[in-house]
Every structure is written in structure tokens, then in C-alpha cells.
Amino acid sequence: MHILPRVIRAALACLAAGLLCRIPMVAADAPHPAPVPAPPVPTLEQRVAGLEAYLANADPAATLKDSKGNIPSGLTTPSVGVAGPGHNVWQMTSSALVLFMTLPGLALFYGGLVRRKNVLSVMAQCLLLSGLVTILWWLCGYSLVFHSGSAVLGGLGFAFLNGVSAAPNTDYSFWVSHNVFAIYQLMFAIITPALIVGAIAERMKFSAIFLFVVLWMFVVYFPQAHMVWGIDGFMNGVWNPAAGIKAIDFAGGTVVHMTSGWSALVLCIILGKRIGFGRDNLAPHSLVLCMVGTGMLWVGWYGFNAGSAVAADGVAANAFTTTTLAAAVASFVWPMAEWLTKGKPSVLGFCSGAVAGLVVITPACGFVTVNGSVLIGVAAGIVPWFFCYKVKSWIGYDDALDTFGVHAVGGTLGAFLTGVLARNGANANLAANLKDKVLDSCLQPLVFEQLKAIGLTILLAVAGTTAIAYLVKALIGLRPSREEEMEGLDLTDHGEPGYHHD
Amino acid sequence: MKFIIAIIKPFKLDEVKEALAQIGAEGMTVTEVKGFGRQKGHTEIYRGSEYTVDFLPKVKLEIAVADELAGKVVEAIVGSAKTGKIGDGKVFVVPLETAVRIRTGESGEQAV
Image (tube, rainbow over all chains, first blue to last red; front, side, top):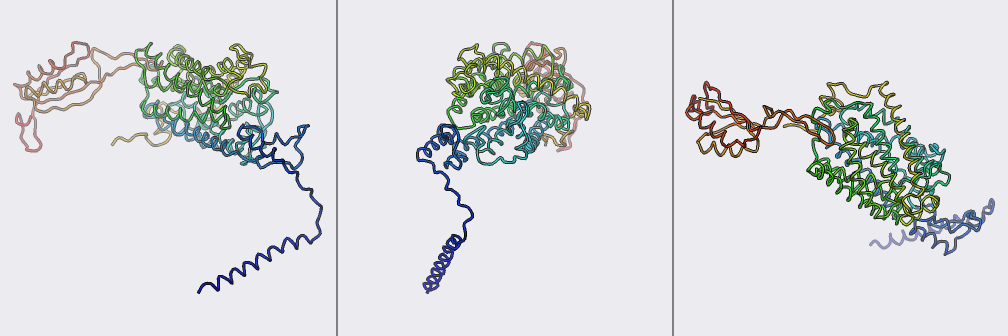
């Protein structure tokens, strides 16, 4: 019954196909404007070399260059200008892991360490920064950091993420999509100001934090990140042969931990101590939340450190390994130091040790060997511990959740130890521009480059934060009223309590 | 009738309860409280930050009993709550005017 209509339909389809086939023939009959020479075709060797470059995280276009180093016009292979799936997978995973460090890792870690009347305030601050910094990053933040420009700040070519597409930006990666790279780096820009929140917790107005962070991103973070990671950055010793300071920072010891930690110290001193400091019990309201947050930070840190290889390659594998060792060793050493000196190993000690180990290994993870990372873990368990337990009470500043003790001290220690322990065997890229700095010895010239970078970073963070803090203080004030602070910022800043009593 | 208020160390609550059950004291009200006496507070350091502990955690017992049982109750509490160290607590005994059992309306000694 249905055969006839089917036959008719098939005949019509043949007719239509025939008509369509005619169209190009008609076009070919028309006068041709100017003959375009056929593009050069890559050889099979060139195509295979492009694919092999994917395995080695190398430049797929390198094989197309002639003896003078130029690529003939139009010559390309299918490997050029596309993202490598494996590298992209790891970078997207890492981006999510780094966001997970802030939401909810840091929010829980900090939330547990404050009193119950302020638990939501630190969580709100972490949430605020996730949204706010993303907007700044899209607006021009990414461009100011990663577009080429001056040695101190990038240009505006990538403002509004203009031109940031799925094709890799070969300044930073041959295989990771440019937009994935931009989002990955955004996560670092989010967590850095969020770390500052720890020092000033329980006593800074929400509106003041808002204004402070907007200014701080432009004055401190964007210039610092460009100087260290921008392709023409002043302190980018690995990739910029013209760098003024040939320092190295794999995952952000100076960019993330030193800037946030030193700014935190300055801000908490300008802000003043919490009401009741030195008299009332300001101890954490929930070490359970703090412990849960610590676990998330540790897991997320694999994206932070191993992801900073911007590839799923051998450098990332080494960073993954060193990160594990340093965190584990420090999480062991810190509570043992406590046990010996105070009689009890505390849960906060275990948590702080793990975070300190992760902080100190951050600048070093992609440049040191696994044995170097064990040494770093030991140092991370002792030096920041000493600052949190002893130096803080000697000087008397109110660093509420030990942002300075862990992140500034740990970040500075890490930047220094990176200079001492960086080895060519751990990362072949060190040979590119740092042949005369990395000599595989503990007193190699790189140590002095690291010290210079430490000095410049502290200067930028301290000077920038001092200026911004006094500006915000003059404009809108930094602290809530005494009454508001006593009541707790959950209710006064956000109108909701963290916990209900039924 | 007497109303007996005892402030004791929290970890002694079970022993005191047992001792009171043995002498036939029926019922008590228990509250977690904070306070200080001669033991006073003390200074502690948490993560490098000093703070003063003014009020120490204690448990408060309230027991209403007939006059003739009051002496035994005080004895039982003192005997079972004692550690001999500072901070063991105190027992207060005050006269009780009346008591009413809400369910039945009984009053006086029948009600305690």
C-alpha cells in the first residue's frame, strides 16, 4: 500500500539532488575573479609531528617552520590552533577544584574558626568575592594580567574576554583552550582576596570589604600576577628572558599567599583588635566545620598546584606528587610540635599544618624533587607554627584566623625555599631562561632572585594595602559600631543567623 | 520542707544521682550552669591569643524534700560529689513554704 508514495518520494529526492548538483556547475561557468593558489599541504611527517607535540605538550606548529624559522603562508596541520582534549580535561577539572577551595572549602574552614555569631559573615564574604572578582576579571582583570603590555601591567586587548576563545593562547599553552585558561586563572584571583578575610574576620564591615577588595585587585593583585605570570612580566623568570628579576613561582606563593598574607597583616593592624581580644574567649565555634573545610582545601589544592602546569604532563605529575608529600609531612609535624610544647595535639593543629604545607609547597611544587618537598613539609610544620603560637602573642596583633602566620609566613618561606631547592631534574623548563641561575645547589644564584622577588612583593602588598585601607577608612569607615560587633555580623550585616535555636 | 540547691562538678552528676536514689530522694531538677567561687577563673592561651576563663562549667541540682530527709540528702551529695580538690562546689539549704503537685492538686509534704 505504501510502496507507491515511497517510490515517488525517492524519485523527487533524486531530482532535487540533481538540481543541487547543477548549482556548482553553473557557478563554475561564471567568470572567476582571481585564481587563488592552493594552500600548501603538510607532509605526513609534519602531521604526525603535530600529533606527537600533543603527547609532549610541545608546539604543534614547530615542525612547519622552514630553515629560517618562518611558517610558509597557509601551511598548517589539523593539530594547530585547536585544544588538546586531555590537557583541556585536566585544566577544566583543575579550575573546578580551585573554585572548590573557596566554595565551600575556605568558607567552611574560616566559618568554623569564628564565633557562631559571625559564621555567615565570612561565608557571605567568600560568596561575594566569587561573584565580584569574576565580574572584574571579565571586565579587564584577565587582560591586565595576561595580555602583553608593560613589565608591570598587561594591556586591554582581552578586556571583556574579547578574543578569548577555545583556541589555545600559545603565550601560555599550546594545548589548553584560552577561555579555559582564563577561567582557571580567575579562580586564583577569587581565592586570594578571600584569604585576607581570615585576618580581619568578625570586625570589618561588609561594605568596607567590598570597596577594599575592588581597589586591592587593581592596585596589588593584577600588577603582581602580571609581573610573575604575564608573558612579559617583570618577575617571570621562567618564560620572560627580559625579566628584571629572574624569579620563579609555580602556583602562586608570591602572587596568592604573600600578597594576601602581608596585606592581611597590614589591614588587621590598621583595623585594630576585636572587642574582647586578650580577655574574652574568641575560640572557634566549630572545629568540625574547620576540619571539613581543610579536607576540601587539600583536595582542591591538587588543581591549584598540579593544574598550574597548564597541561596534563610530567611537570603536573611531579607537582601532584610534591604537593601530597609536603601537605602530609606538615600536617604531621605541626601537631607533633604542639604535642611536645603544649601537651596535646589539637585538631586545629592538624588542619593548620596541612594548610601550611600546601602553602609552602605552592611556589615550589613544579620545580622541586619529591625529597625537596619533604624538607619543605618539615619547614612548613615548624616555621608558621612558631609564628602563630609565639610571635603573634609577642607582637600582639589580632590576626583572627592566622592568615599572616600561615599564608604570609608560609608563602615567604616557600618562595625562599623554591630558590634553594629548585632542580633542573624536576622541571626541564628551568633550562630555557635560567641556565645560569639554577645550578642544582642550595646556594644557587636563583636564591637571590627569589629574595628580590620577596622584597618587591612585600613592598607592593604593604604599601598598596596601607593606602587603600586608609582611603576606605576615610570614605566609608572600616569597622561596624561597637554594638553591631557585639551582636555579631551575621545579624547586623546580613539579617540572618547561622543557626536557629528551636 | 527544705529546698536544696547543690552546685557540683559536671562529671560527678552520675555518682550524686546514685547516692540520692539510695536514700530515697525522689526527683530532682538538673541544670548546666557556669560560675565561680573560690576557685576563680584562670587565663588560657588559645593559638597564641590569651583569654580569661571567668566562669567555669558546673551542674546545678535542685531538690525539694521533707524536713527529716534534708540532712541525709546533704550528706549524700557531699559524700558523693567530693574530690577534695578546689572547685568541688557547694550545697545550699533553704526553707520551703509549700509545694503543689500539679496533676493531683496535693500540697505540702505529699507533693514533694
